[in-house]
Image (tube, rainbow, N blue to C red; front, side, top):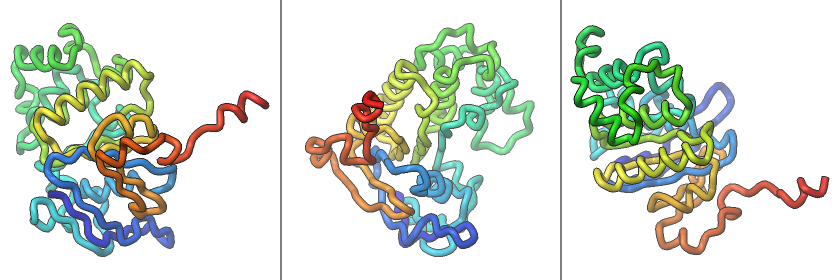
Length: 250
């Protein structure tokens, strides 16, 4: 279980997380929604260990990890960023990136990581991702955003984590690529019962997947909805909506 208790994070005079308290049970798939500036990225940074809180505690399976940095938590917590360039090395091939990800939780020199994944295993993973095998020899930066995010998900889950953080992974993708990525992710998460937190601006995604929804507003989780609650929710009740009728009238 992941538990945050009265977490506070500030940048100068700007108080971002304010006594933030929440807990994720094993196997939970929680979708987090909130407006820009609500503190969503800082919330993930704090869980991952990129940012250490000024006060409060973070425990993972009843072990206090509050003062452990990102590297120390990496064996248990994996994160996929919205920015595809943060999830892989663009100048390296897909196969090379997969090899490095295979070695990501071990202490090794670069040359060890580059030979960590046999070709047949890399081909098997590409098949699972629904991507062509020839793509293994393409550089990551030559691929589309959807392909990069899908491969990034494969890299992040080579070692099944205790906590999977998905930081708006579909924000820069078209609907087709988003559907493919989320379909693969949901299938993997259900099969392996991985505790997952996903940030999104899309209320339709929040209502379509996961078993819980958290609303983060100005550094505080103001509402929590369970699976039964979701059946009675409308997208407009989560984080507002675009007034298309008003736009059409302009």
